[in-house]
Length: 105
Image: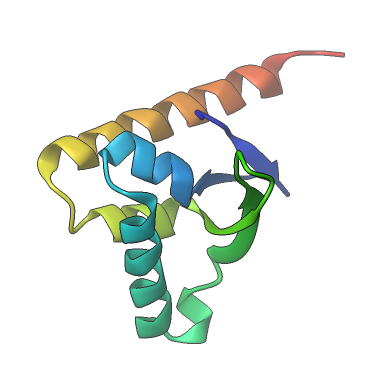
């Protein structure tokens, strides 16, 4: 997957990518994101966006897009290896964004 979605200069990671990086089932990640979303007051959950993707059968499936703070909140309860994979991936995304911003037209 390894996608960076850029919206208004903010980096977003999808729940599908988080599941892939942490070697968890996507359903489990969705459940954890919903739990965090429901536990946070509205002003602290603006970095979690509910959306969908189309699966291999053409069916719409639930997915979340999370900003960096929300991803870090989510994976803080995961094991050390999963947390480090997420940290390394964010570093890649940030470096890619820096490199892209240095390119002159």
